[in-house]
Amino acid sequence: MTTAEQRKDLIRKLLKGIETGDPASVAVVNEAKYIQHNPQTHEGSEGLASLFARLAKTNPRVNIVRAFADGDFVFAHTEYDFSTRRIGFEVFRFEGDQAVEHWDNIQLRRGPNASGRSMVDGPIEATDLENTEANRALVRSFAEQVLIERDLERLARFVDADGFAQHNPNLEDGIEALRAALRATTGGEPTIAYRRVHRVLAEGSFVLSVCEGAVAGAHSALYDLYRVANGKLVEHWDTVEHVAPRSEWKNDNGKF
Image (cartoon, rainbow, N blue to C red; front, side):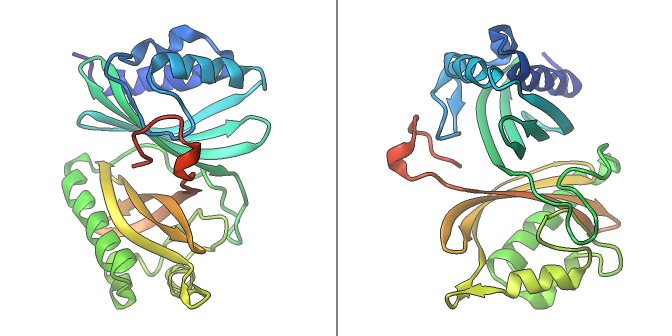
């Protein structure tokens, strides 16, 4: 049985295979069981091998900035340079030594933001491993009570008001910029509307929430990575990706 660190290394090798197009990099994938949730990718390791071969022709560069493990899941924060620069989150579920399911969320890289932060810089190592479950519960409650229920009066209960570091390219550091973004409306509706929490993954101080909602009225996947310290959210990275219409999907598994 592979350890958490070995699984992280297998995923790093898999993702670096995008640079070379080497089909051997997808050996970690169990083709017979693999469930692909990227709507633009065909099922199985054959679909990945074809994708990697196509992407390799663009002379891509792949940087795995952070990688974490949570039970049978590995989640990674990634930086891609294809014909355009992109930032992504990759989530894999393992059974034994192989990955059997995959989700991702990728957007164009932008920034730095008004506070001078990029979409990927900052701490990379998980700490406070003994607080994993408490931190997971904190982020889930934040997502449900503040983001979905839109109870902004509770914002300061979750977010460090004095030292919140923001990596979203449209925002700056601090709780007030976040509050303003969550209050913003487009056509009378919230510009950023969270509607459902699908998954909360955690390793120590880092917690990733996978949510579904809408941005400016468009059906979207919202992945938010938080760093937690002393029971508060102290740092935030994210990606937003519009969900492709059903007519464009190359598999039937859905984005979430």
